Length: 132
Image (tube, rainbow, N blue to C red; front, top):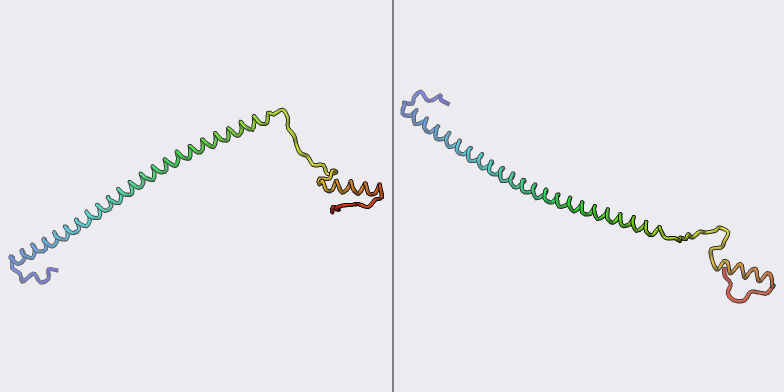
């Protein structure tokens, strides 16, 4: 701190100054070394991140190309479907199945109604299986 320097001669003061400069130089060298190491590490990490970014960009481009190709295939498929629908709808004949509420939809019901009607006309008992 310089409080006890009054009793030292010039030679001792120069020796002390040299030791301080050597210590200061050593501290600066250590600091420079640490900073250089840190800078190199940051450069290395930056380079790795850059390479990873380039790889991700390449993958995105590949996926984008695949997406475009799938989109083209989908459009082509839809166009074929529309074309097929147009050619099949140009057929000269068509039919539609309709249901009439007054007509029995079950063959068994029709047969049952016919048998009941015959039995009432003839008065004869019904033979065979009965349908329920």
